[in-house]
Image (tube, rainbow, N blue to C red; front, side, top):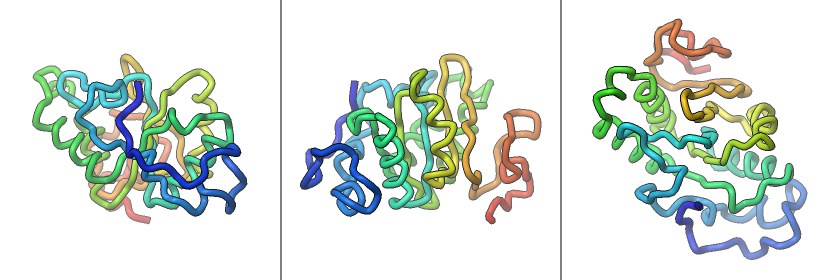
Length: 201
């Protein structure tokens, strides 16, 4: 099920994804891919124990709109349909993380790992990051392993049924103090292992 999205569409969507620097994707707005609301019952806005947990989806965080455009371009050039992509603005992610912190059930508060991920996502939203949600299938999974470097992804998460997987990115940049302990998550980047709170390049 797809999220409600803006009814506006680019002037020209036909003709495939097009080459970089040409067509509506490189010069037009991507507003039509952004969710109009995060309050729906769509799978990508699923909550678990009150916490935002889009099971079966991958979530990518990008520092600016140009990075969003690059990510969409890479994904669609590799066979993904635009209808399979849901974009979120910084304020929409803040809404999701704020609701998660307020609505988390007892089990979510005891385990706390998912709430800590919400803290990181809220930090990224606070610095203007945009977010991309996509169904994580066997066909998409290998692509997610490489898209990070090409689209300047700051953080990538794959939400599985029982756990959240950290996806490789070009350079993970967490703007605030990490809520995770040293042994709590797989750390492939020095930035999130740095417990000083200064993760800026």
